[in-house]
Image (cartoon, rainbow, N blue to C red; front, side, top):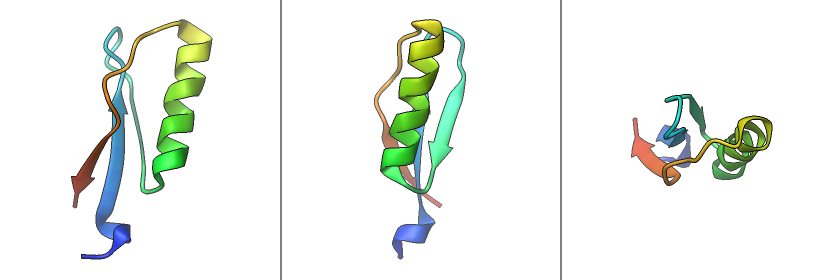
Length: 50
């Protein structure tokens, strides 16, 4: 399985917003941006094979 089949997902614990990307850093940056805008908390960044 290639890296392209991997999807990084993060979910907001407060509003259930989800950020996801094939690149771990971009998914993390999305979560950081949402936190900075809302102050919401996030679950861990998880990898899901597609």
